[in-house]
Length: 230
Length: 247
Image (cartoon, rainbow over all chains, first blue to last red; front, side, top):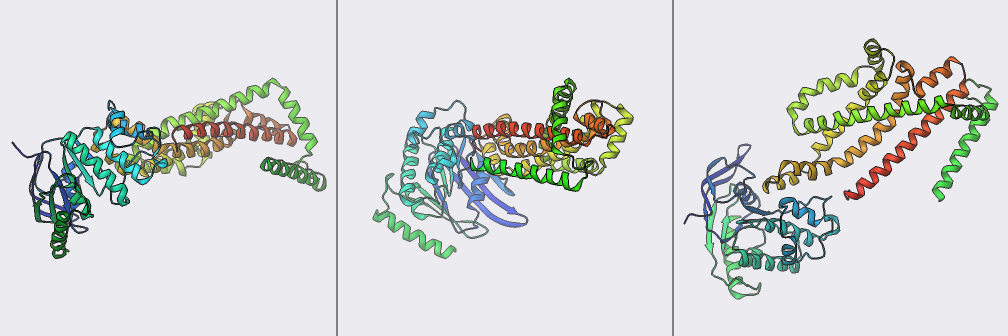
């Protein structure tokens, strides 16, 4: 069976400045991959190329699905549309009640974005991505502005949705703990131009705790790798 | 309530200063006596010709505004999303803005003579650049992240237009209506005066021929009042639209 994503010798330059160099990456169905690396290493650019929002300068990018959900860093909700209308905007025949219950947004259907907290807006952002029933869920620094308890709550929601639906996940984050809680594989990019310097699988249970010794050990190992990359 | 009291106080103060100036300066051709203006007001309102003039002027204001919005908004949208088309149209917009109204008036009289078409066309020409350029600026100020989100989720174009573009443009459309409505009244009156055959502008022209300054002021007062009433009605409508769209 082919990979859901297959990237070979990918390069991307903006105005002559190379931001991604020689990226080779294959992703299977239902994998949960976190991409980490220093600022400017091209993590977001890589996600944008995979989702079709950018085109590569060179190389091959093959994606076996058009059904992509994208949780943006900023919620990108339509300010003059309420939660219900924002969700229906991307899928008219969606089962709203189901997704609202799963992402714990019941009772907020008629709320406008300006009436929601940052955490709630990100939940709507996530619900909008999930409502399309994606084969690939992309999360670009989606929870970076949230407090830890809210972040942990949303991470649990994402994982339970993954268990239920089995979509592939690509996560870009600065937060190593977030990556370790969500991913089963971690890809580390070097500083600009971004190149893959490490691609490691995590042998951890799905339901993890921040204080888990195995997780803490992995965190220390990755921090060591990152210290050489920065 | 206090605001209303202050407004009324301001009006009373203005009328008092007017009356003092009318008496002291003895320049009744410019500042007539308030009593004379009031008398003219009652005479004008009682005549059937006044109602016909109001309907005629109002009709022209509405026609000019509709023409402005129907052409200015879609064209502004097109020019806003496409810089190449904007560059092509820019010289035409500049010509419309730069040509003096008096030249347009002369050309309109050559083309159509005296009538209703001239005032509507002249008013349209003076409002059109405002509507067009405000819409262009509205489209250019649109949150591009929302468009990117819509393209990622393959949202149909018509939904992007109704849900994103229209919502973003509503404050700009409100601003266009706000600015153009006030201007429409002024320009219509001037162009009726110069190339119209009916309306309040023509009544002012008649008052000039009669050398009747109180009548000129009475008609001016009525025109201002009608302008303010339509402005309030439009603002009320826009307020409701803004509430519906949560903007």
